[in-house]
Figure 1 (cartoon, helix red, strand yellow):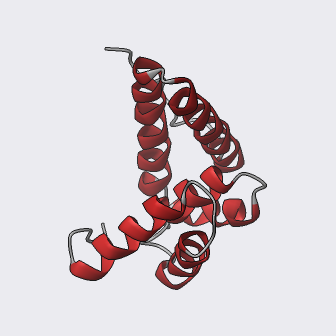
Figure 2 (spheres, helix red, strand yellow):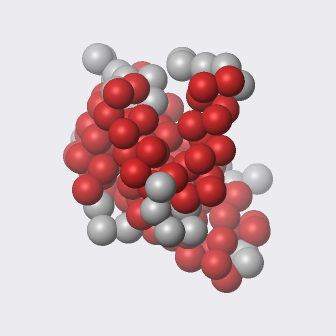
Figure 3 (cartoon, helix red, strand yellow):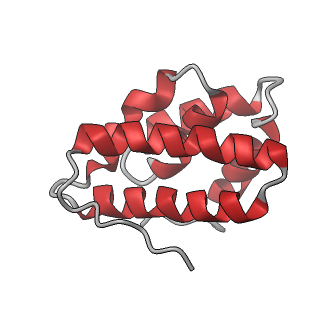
Length: 123
């Protein structure tokens, strides 16, 4: 298994940029059917989220800056990552994506269903 680099000294804005980059690369890996790469990138995404959460004040809130990113995948993953720290805003983004014709619409709808049915719980 690939180890994730230590992110403790990485600035919040760099973590947000890295999150967006990883999200874009995850989307491409999924399109290309590169499951091993996707899994590696997923672990990196989780590591970024974990690091942001561990920062004073739960800095996942900084991912709200990605709600207007040109990539729908980045928006979707940012909304998922911020449900606990910005539930109203995250829900709004997920609802917009769910109502769209983008490929992420189904995943956004499933995220909302999991949220509403209690399958997903805030952390």
